[in-house]
Length: 226
Ligand code: URA
Image (cartoon, rainbow, N blue to C red; front, side, top):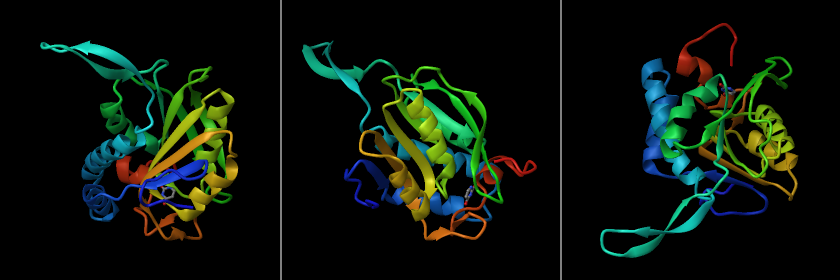
């Protein structure tokens, strides 16, 4: 199930952020005439807007603060700090936008590549904290297509002890959302936040209408890298 109104349902929740500025930036990202430089700027701005919604469940502790006039109640981010995990290569284009909202987060890196024939994801780089016990994790991957990469990444993060994972994607396909929903039972907290839910996948596993290859749009075509 996909919730356009950003209301929690079931165990995996999927939020399609319905805001005119989000849609305007996504539209410009989709445009094939948008150059790499502009694309990077827009992706950065868009992630910052998505991060605002994606961090709605961030853990905080209540504190008392002294204003110049009197004391009042407020909150500070709880420990341990959240971890942001961009999935290389394209997730790197989302990191700065996320760090702008969560500057004290730790950053871990996962390099994942999908075989363009089988569409199966494999891990080629793992620079994560060994122990993610009790950590909230924000996974950044611009395109939630088949869901294979995201599910593999989330399984690894749960194995390391993460207990709450929010994935942020610029665009998602219904197939990818369904795969994430099927992969995780009711014992885990998983949220997918996206700017757009597209029609589906083409026969090469690309999201349509989509925006093309997110890595190439961000960084230029470098061989077959994701
Ligand atoms: N990866 C991309 O970069 N684009 C898609 O449409 C699907 C996967």
